[in-house]
Amino acid sequence: MMQWFRKPVKSVELGESVDSEVELSDLDLDSEVESSDLDIGRVTTEEEISGPILSVKEVHRSFPVGGGDIHVLKGINMEVLPGQLVMLRGRSGSGKTTLLNMLGGLDQPTSGEIIFSGQPLHELSDDKRTELRRDQFGFIFQAYALLPLLSAWENVELSLRMAGVPPQEWKKRVTHCLEIVGLGKRMFHRPNELSGGEQQRVAIAKAIAHRPKLLLADEPTANLDSQMGAQVMAVFKNIIHTEQVTICMTTHDPTILEVADHVYEMVDGKFVE
Ligand SMILES: Nc1ncnc2c1ncn2[C@@H]1O[C@H](COP(=O)(O)OP(=O)(O)OP(=O)(O)O)[C@@H](O)[C@H]1O
Image (tube, rainbow, N blue to C red; front, side, top):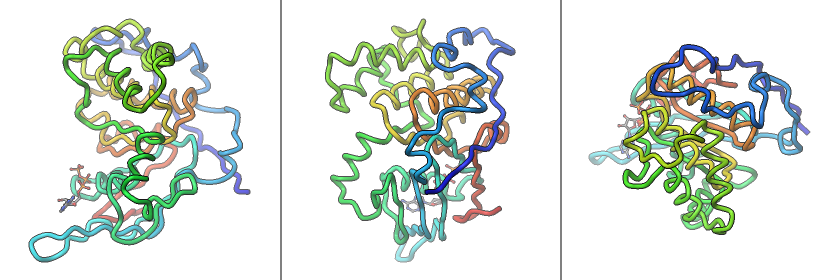
């Protein structure tokens, strides 16, 4: 059995510099987890001591372009442990999104292995990968992917409906998810009645509603100012505890790196130290 340790991380300060658009008191972080828990000491589960949730071995990805091949990923190796927040950092075009798509089963490597919770993603049929994505993965993209005519509540409910969660569970789960992202008082607002940071937090609630094991986020703070970005990161740290989710995300933003358990620096399709 492999034992692992969490690197102590600095949590995002939630109580400072409140701006007018976002009420930080909305963040009900203390209802289920003490703020001090954001840094340290939580109970290690059986799964955590049993090894990585995601294991990537020698992954390459090429795309056919104009009669030739463009080699985008050039031998990626990584391991993600349950409950970690892992960031992929690198310049535009370095291959971050290509890798994230692969980790989420949206694309297949040209060669190499991706093992998720013991299952070889790279060998699964399209149908099996679709099923896995629906049940065990959550996705957050830069553009919030919220339906503009639906309220925050309805947007989150829709994702439960699509995941096949029984209707009698929707109300409790939608309320819970919106509360843990700090939107208990904004549940019936439509996206255009919310700030960018709030919309991104609805997108997080939507992505975790069906209780995924792995959350994949592509530049989740890219369109946000630094305060809103910090709030999104605080929500990420919180849901790792409350929802037992593992998070892999891409970023350009050097100011949020300190909340990561591990940062992989990507240059031209490879990780560098
Ligand atoms: N389907 C594809 N066909 C051809 N080339 C592709 C394809 N997908 C990605 N690429 C190329 O792979 C390289 C890496 O793209 P990728 O989107 O992964 O970079 P990135 O690091 O996420 O960049 P950004 O930070 O700008 O989003 C780019 O040069 C891109 O043009």
